[in-house]
Length: 422
Image (cartoon, rainbow, N blue to C red):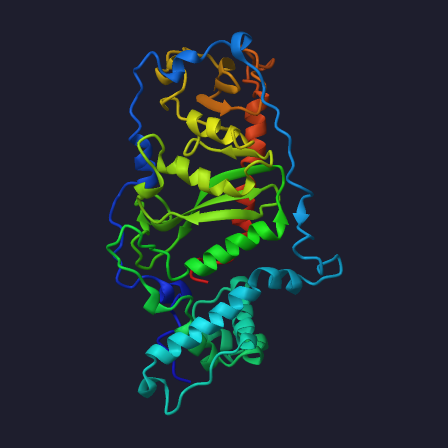
């Protein structure tokens, strides 16, 4: 059987912006660069002047959690119960997406197919049943990694797996793969417009899936925000090149996950964009604000690392009944002056604490200085805390942070079988 030029193509290559150029900026990301735009605040009358010792200012904010019972939202899925199959859950999230895939794939075929290259007569339209089978094969491929697509349909003894040929013929699979589409190409807007969406080809499906994440699931009280890096070798303008990283070419995705590893919301980083920020709000601040929009007023506890944490962000989220804890960069605007100037001469096990209303900033010396910002914990005691062996004793705030920041690692492990191409 003759091989197809599509056999070694990644699916995501078929939907990427073919006219876009690879990002050649050697910086880690425009988002991180935006953080450096916040100047060091030398004004003694700034908010950093209001920080003081914990015995003078500290008090803990107690938020009331009202997010509902964790797990499936039975109000939105009353027909799902303990006897339901995994396919029933799958249909909650993907029924509308399957319909859209079929519609746009058939549209693209009829708009652009060259009949002379595709055979003597038109192929039949893809049906929803076929699209389910197609996606089933894609999912199985994630558990059965092979070098080439044609190997899945090989009759050679070392490759033969009847599942693939019984589910769908290879030529039909490659036909669907060739014309798989997620949007009408005629709806593309001007690339030079400020409002141009670099993710427009999959925007509808991406937003539909995010909406389903919220609609059908109530997350745990504790959530974590972080960025994940997805290996990606094809050409899109928002791909980033990091020569010092193992995954040199990559796409950055911001995610919010709960203790079960459930992705509650996500956002693809599409390049530096100041439309969502202003002089007082960085892009990372605006990113967290957007990811938290679905949990406002519910009393969730949010954890993040120093890529996101800032006093202004924590203060804003508290007004929306969201308390936060995270590592923080000591030179951030709004932090205590002695933190930002790194004036402490700490020994191993030492803790220094400053508070401002509900906000607590602490630095703890272990192998290096660890800076934490929180408004969900009571201020710890200052002093030097080591065990009988001279090892630094970890503050409860640091232990709590470490416990809850692993949520995205769990989500990554569960998704690790599938590259972005699949």
